[in-house]
Amino acid sequence: MESLTTRSISIKVIAKYEAEASSPEQQKFVFSYQVTIENKGLDAVQLLDRHWIIVDADNVMREVKGPGVIGLQPVIEPGADHVYNSWSVLRTPIGKMMGSYGMHNMQTGESFQVKIPTFKLIADFVYN
Image (cartoon, rainbow, N blue to C red):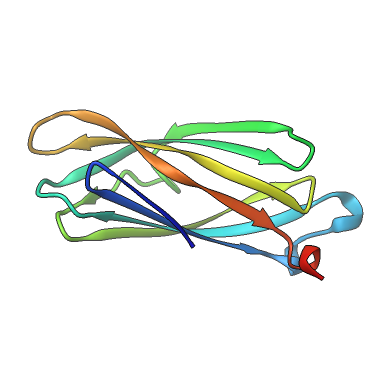
């Protein structure tokens, strides 16, 4: 698990290789990941958008930007969290992801960025 806290917003990510959905002979390596966004601050915040950078072992980079996460723009109250699951497909068995969330403080109206920690995507068979 990787974790990082920016401005009282803690991001934790757990990644997993999905062997049954992958097809190595076709250069298709599927990874799932679970993100926990915890509000350790005093004000409610809303997650407005996401920006992912996905890099494979061939150093090919993709960017994904868009509103919310999995179709939601959750409001996260102080002391609460928002957990979601998603996935990514790489052409190599090793890669990494990183990025940021655009957040909005519901009390002050301020917008700010929260960093997503860099996490590795490694197929299980790479360790053998």
